[in-house]
Image 1 (cartoon, rainbow, N blue to C red):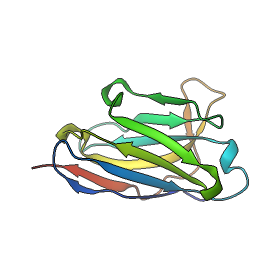
Image 2: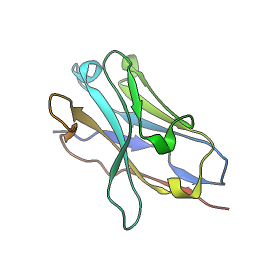
Image 3: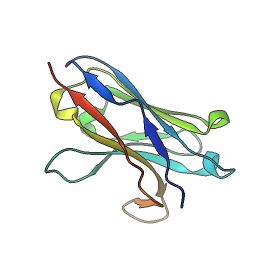
Length: 121
């Protein structure tokens, strides 16, 4: 019910890097699969990366090799390291718990405010 809290966005030049953070709480955090979504202006929200309780990861093709999702359960935090950023990565980025016992995976809970990532020269 309590949304996760995103931070770390900003303005960066093409080819640059940013690290986003997703802060959660509660004893269940370490057991949850967490996903990063993004939504660009005029486009549908898309799932770009996810990480499960065992540390397994998945990425959309457009970010493979450039983005890395990780988690630090001691800090109740999930990270998204974004390298080699492109203008088309510009979007509001959101993190949320994923329900994985359905297909396709489904966001579970409330959306937070997100964090703006702008890639521009």
